[in-house]
Image 1 (cartoon, rainbow over the protein chains, first blue to last red):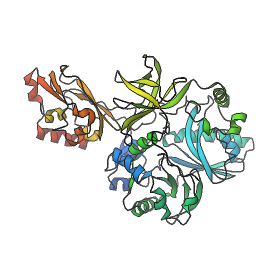
Image 2 (cartoon, rainbow over the protein chains, first blue to last red):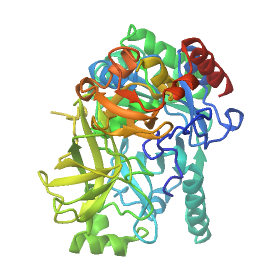
Image 3 (tube, rainbow over the protein chains, first blue to last red):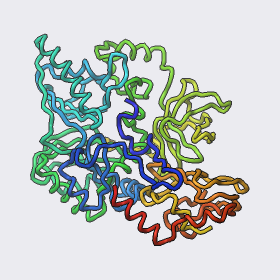
Image 4 (cartoon, helix red, strand yellow):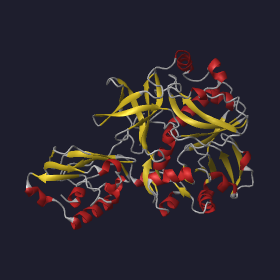
Amino acid sequence: MRGGLWQLGQSITRRLAKGDKKAVARRCFATESELKKTVLYDFHVAHGGKMVPFAGWSMPIQYKDSIMDSTLNCRQNGSLFDVSHMCGLSLKGKDAVAFLEKLVIADVAALAPGTGSLTVFTNEKGGAIDDSVITKVTDDHIYLVVNAGCRDKDLAHIEEHMKAFKAKGGDVSWHIHDERSLIALQGPLAAPVLQHLTKDDLSKFYFGEFRVLDINGSECFLTRTGYTGEDGFEISVPSEHGVELAKALLEKSEGKIRLTGLGARDSLRLEAGLCLYGNDLEQHITPIEAGLTWAIGKRRRAEGGFLGADVILKQLADGPSIRRVGFISSGPPPRSHSEIQDEGGNNIGEVTSGGFSPCLKKNIAMGYVKSGLHKAGTKVKIIIRGKANEGVVTKMPFVPTKYYKPS
Amino acid sequence: MNGLSMKAQWPQLDHLGEVVFVELPEPGGSVTKGNGFGAVESVKATSDVNSPISGEIVEVNDKLTGKPGLINSSPYEDGWMIKIKPSDPSELESLLGAKEYTKFCEEEDAAH
């Protein structure tokens, strides 16, 4: 699926036409009218949002402030993201847990009600179909969010397996939450601002937890999670109340929390060392190779029972041949598919995402290298436009995370 | 070599956003009209920069190494990239002046 997602410019470089012809930015995407719009579309435009196509939706890549300032503001104050393009769904039934365990690496049974985790949907070869945050609401209700770019693929996959499972007498059904919109609120001011809009005591609500509660007068699904490395929340709100919730959050922050687009979202997640599906995680990459072994439940490592378990358990025993690592480099920012070489000029891997870090003021990147060359401090060369640039394997996250956990 | 005609060759500057890195050639090299001599990187995209005329590169702006953002903040003054000694003065006539360039950019924006 490489290139199937428009990777926010990471893997597409815009090359201007040469010579005396009119310079035309190459447009590879659907026209504006074919793109889906979230309920916040007009709100984004009214606030200066620069709308771009992303995974079939028209989404704001940035607003009036620069991507760099927006990224810095998220960590200093906070950001509000419209992530309604992502797909939220519920699996219900007394066998919902057993069903989902066939498709993901998580120990779903062991999750306490009201808690969740990052997981990976695997294929028969142990590769990643998608990554997802799953939450056990109750023993017979699981709420999950999958990537916008993988919506059709994921839903077809789940549906196919659900049909087979039900044919054998399993009790599971699903509901896709197209009636809801997802808003992410991230940064140090996220909790204090959200507290103004709900009676629940957020100080006892920790990273990875989930609740259904009233926020600003509507019944929302709240998860303390995010894609920035900061403390924050993802709020699933009935779509008809999406705009008023966004407005209320911004107002309560007295302008400190800003509407933030996909451009800054990508910088933030890269600084936090988080994978972007389609770049750092793909159909042919296993969770072990991606450094997500921690996400495989202990019982699952012993029992398997998910697609591709044989491949994954073997890698667990023998070690994978490649590993995802971080890099800091000099020269131009590394981009997806830049070659990585050892100091002797031998190919040892490939960059899968990279860019300039607004917080560190350095180039950061993620990629895969041969096992053995993955230790922090290993010097590498990153080839960009035919020139070798110095890089060093660096532990991630690049910027320390601030997840709200009990002390 | 003035900043105006340089910018005429890559009107997408505004669309590039904040510049984080500028790749420049060495002084003493040569450039050919219409061919790339370097690149400008923003947070989200890379663009080749094409030379508006042919000639010898007599000077390169080292300030851009430490301060690539000068291209955004001062494209006509401190954000100059290279100085070229023209090898064919007739090429200068085909360059856009300030007014024509502004009109060109407006037409480009309207078309998208």
